[in-house]
Length: 120
Length: 111
Image (cartoon, rainbow over all chains, first blue to last red; front, side, top):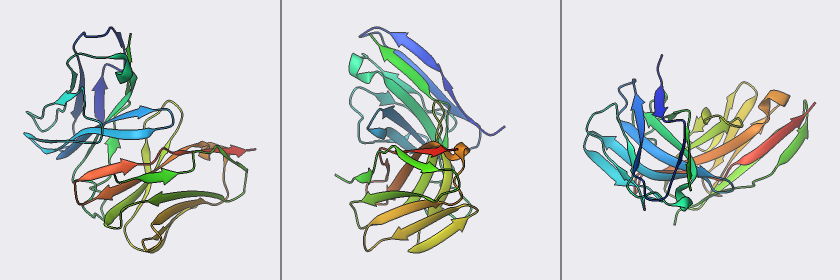
């Protein structure tokens, strides 16, 4: 089944304890992205990647790191989590970048199930 | 700062009515426009994408794009209680390579 898999789905941690949220897709997608979702603020982009070893900042990258060493994986790293990073996180991927017109739907994002993170 | 604005709602409509969801965006060079639906506790899923001015219909859903006025809308005809969800408008920008979401409009369809 074509999917984007995130782990963990739920995590409660404490301030300063490094954590990694994994994201893996099995669709050979080139584009991958991380979003956080907070009430009233919608989905805000943290980082995105156009392909292996190509990453760029989104709108809210502070406090986060990413890497794209393999095409299928795009982990999100919180080196020193703080309470303001408590949020619902979504990983998403698409065959081509969203801004590339596609009648076949290659630019449509497939989202993971989400990871709810609480930082105490 | 590129922005995408939606009415947060909640928007309440009776079953069988037409629900109208609106979205405005700030940048005239916007390329692609998407409507996603998100049920409570679930991840977003695509309803429609639209790239050109005018209407695009898919079943009970019609997306309307007006680039001159910088708005995109979604009409849901014959609304059903199963349409109750949050609807997210997303706009992609070729410059800067971003896809920006609005804050979402919560729709409630009452039986």
